Amino acid sequence: MKLMKVMVVVGTRPEIIKMSPVIKVLAQEGIPFIFVHSGQHYSKELDGIFFQHFNLPKPHYRLNVGSGSHAEQTSRILLGMERVLSRESCDIVLVQGDTNTVLGASLAASKLNIPIGHVEAGLRSGDMTMPEEQNRKVADCLSTLLFAPTPRSVSILTNEGADPKKIFLTGNTIVDALLQCDAKISPRRGFLKSTIGSDEPYLLLTLHRPTNVDYRSRLQSIMEGMRGIKKQLNMPILWPIHPRSLKNFERFGLNSNVVRLIEPIGYLEFIGLLKYSELVLTDSGGVQEEACVLKVPCVTLRENTERPETLEVGSNMLAGTEPDRISNAVVTMINRPRDWTNPFGDGNAGRRIVNILLNWNRGD
Ligand code: UD1
Ligand code: UDP
Image (cartoon, rainbow, N blue to C red; front, side, top):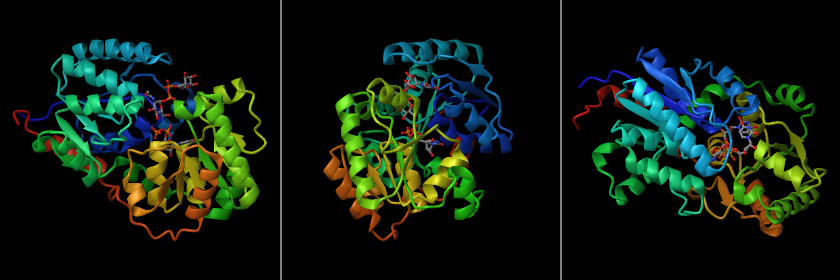
């Protein structure tokens, strides 16, 4: 049967970024699609600025689920998606990544027997306490098409027993988004002067995982680590702070003199700051990938990663949250030659995904 209509679902900052290359190709090919935004992220700096940057169309449906506990958020997405899916007949629902939006949308589609295509399938941290690990496993399990970004994610899916006919090696759409953005970034000095007012060397920090920012002792320990690094390297540490982290930072009464807090920033600004930084410290999934592609050393403030390809190629090191371990990892990584290779693809993942959809036979 010929592909007729696609539903594309997003809900958070990384989903908007990583789905945009797919949306771009769908639009180029004139493939009709219904665009749904769950509203999991709603603040302009986590949502609207990315719609502007990627020139995305207005969603046909906004579920406006907002923030809440996992159960509240997921159930609102489930109900909202059921309503939308019942109104719109579509051949496949595309979800991206591992958020509650992905979980709710996948469950709703699956209950209505509507096929699901999972973009960024087959990632595993091995840590089932992470909400994202739970979400991505469920989504993979329910999906008809699994768009795996790397050979490792293909193997993970195969070893878990997924039908090899459902699995496609596509590369990660982050490379598409990143390369298109990188081409627009101005040279270092001008970019830094206009973005942060100085072109002195600096480090970049991003943190938002609940295990790191929802507990005073953990966040305090990370800040101690930052103090040590700042003393050792004498460089400012810029932190475009996620609202979850800001809320906790203020609630715990932590001192910000060791880091320079800034608002979450748009994609061009963030990628520019990442590209020109000496090193990035992060617990983000997407930032580990982007640092690897841009050849910026990365220290991940976690005990595990669902992007082990970055550890294998040598672009990233796991440092947990103990101050001494963080400092040691920073010194190791900042001195490491930046000669690793990019395991995440060539920037044509969006095109590959759409080609697979166009050739997909629903009877398979
Ligand atoms: C979510 C995803 C996480 C992803 C991250 C990307 C889940 C379980 N988590 O985490 O996988 O890495 O998005 O950033 O799906 N808030 C705002 N404005 C917003 C959205 C949130 O101020 O637009 C604040 C609210 O106080 C909210 C908190 O941030 O309670 C957390 O938001 P939520 O979407 O629940 O989780 P994230 O930590 O953003
Ligand atoms: N990002 C951004 N502005 C910021 C911080 C991050 O544009 O101030 C981008 C970053 O380039 C990456 C994505 O947001 O593509 C990562 O989002 P996040 O860390 O929130 O989610 P995760 O990738 O961990 O799911």
